[in-house]
Image (cartoon, rainbow, N blue to C red; front, side, top):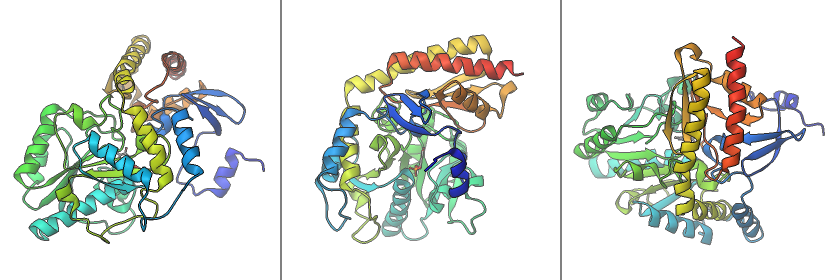
Length: 402
Ligand SMILES: *Cc1c(COP(=O)(O)O)cnc(C)c1O
């Protein structure tokens, strides 16, 4: 069969618009397309491939588990799920874990748990969920409505109710909405899709205090910021604030689909037998790969390497910017960085991404004004240099096309 990009338009639902080239294999931070062109990967499958492509630890775990047991459903438990849950619990504030298959599903579980917990402990009037503008929490109808971009939830009929949005990094806007009827506040401890926006320390502390005052659960969506991305195992660890519920996905499986919701025993108790579930959630294959990813990431070498590699990126991007003056700032933390376009290039982040692909560099955007980088946490220094050299060519081509 002749597999081409044209075939996509013919047989695939048109909700995506993928690049013209079709990747066929990857190794570390390099990817090859059908014509054997080699790309440097600074996109990491949208902050997923935390150990690059085909990391031997993950390939071994996949092959080993693949020969043993793939799927049972939750009528049975399994060893990889229990081992992974124990490791997540030991490494975080959490005491219990619910496994899902994606970030959106982990968030769906978190929101349903918050509503059920509030109903059980405080009554049905306590059902308000507050999230933040520009926030992103997934594409299920509940999570996309909690997300802070109405354009993503409009046009699908009546939305789930009792959901309000405050302004990120603006405590007064949260104060104006929160009350004893609030059951949960959901936030990303570093907004990803919304433009790589870090919270201020005072803001996060203030959110925690307001939740405590009103008996509302604080849910941290660490789907993008978690599993070493910021240099801490989870971003909350670098913020000095502990949530009540944490969701994690993307990097958790290193490229294999898995998500998880972490919480305390007291809160988890509200998800009694039969209240929620998933056919595949916590399947042995996903959990075996995630366990290997977790073991590999949760080491001083990898986590400390993130801060060092962040400096390489920042230095390289600053040098490019001194020549071409396209960014007003480079923001973010660890290996989740965003170059914010200057006034002159507003709305054109996609042009930079397309130019980068032409230079055989994969990167990302975060909205129309931010070029985003989310490479593997173990991206070799030579690949960082090579990727940045290609990015400089891409920037030059956009600037010179004026
Ligand atoms: C990607 C993302 C999600 C959605 O995860 P899926 O696996 O696509 O469902 C949710 N929250 C945040 C912060 C994300 O970055």
